[in-house]
Image (tube, rainbow, N blue to C red; front, side):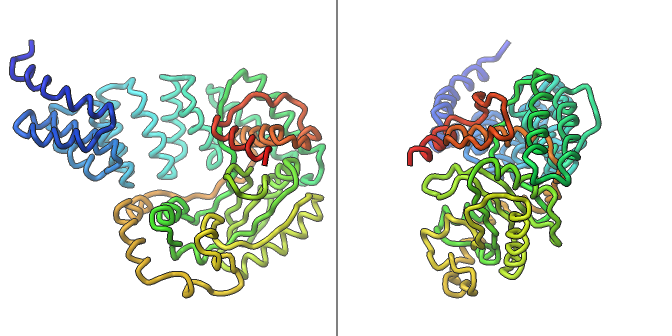
Length: 432
């Protein structure tokens, strides 16, 4: 039975709960300061949760750790793990997630978080192991399914009783058929239609919303960090001045798919990062694009020369190939940044921008996050993830009335795995 003091304490926290539901976090924190004489474990639990919602991970961790051991339940341990994860302290986070599972071995979030954390550390076998444990608890959980599917880009697991792993195993074996037949539509068609048949026979209903296929190396481009700085301060980070990309604009989805298979097999001295994608951004010209990233203008020019000749040899139709500097989003603010032939950093980058970059990194724990995280090579092999993305490309093409896909894929593509927002963006491109 609860004593009167705890009963009174709970009543005092009711307004705080209501404010949190309304996401009025600062007001809730102010009320908590007025209750400093109440149960400190309860106050720290509330503060930890509020700062977690505010994405102030260091403050969240501080308050959760102040809770006495006897008051920590599996959710508190999981939240401590989340805070540590966001701070880039992956090894410490694993210990907290494991403690959550020791208390409650059916707590789904902890298994999911362990899977994500082990993937950041490059331990893909353990990442998959915990994804499977999570799926045992929640077999139709789309988020966990997709985390598992994304891992196949880095690691091919052995056969298992899991239907998704077996599906990936069957589809990945098709890759061998395409090694020397990239220019043959019949070869690409056979691969895609065989993949669709395997997918249908599995009876799995997968919803994979991605629209970009990457082939990565061990270099960290750190694009999220750079965009974060640009969006906040409208400045170009120093790193971006040494980033070049060879951009290929293709005429239709058929050639985008062929380019994807070509990228899988291309031999480059530095195994340059590359990607194929459909364009979803507003007011950006071109629908089907491929990119190869380079660290200098000389390297970019060598890649451009090789790519042009290969695309001709493989009979891929492209609108243009060009070398670009950094990212398109920068051009509106800094037109000079389009110039790839000159060293323009001294004409654009200002000394005080270094302070903005340093403050951003400190506030967002950029260096800490990258300390343990593993940046790995992708397998560069056709897999389940790639096939599901290609199906999204085909849906994109159908919305745009680009029926070139019918030359290689005769299955129904009405099933939508992309978000409603993405679909609306595509429809707008079709009307422009």
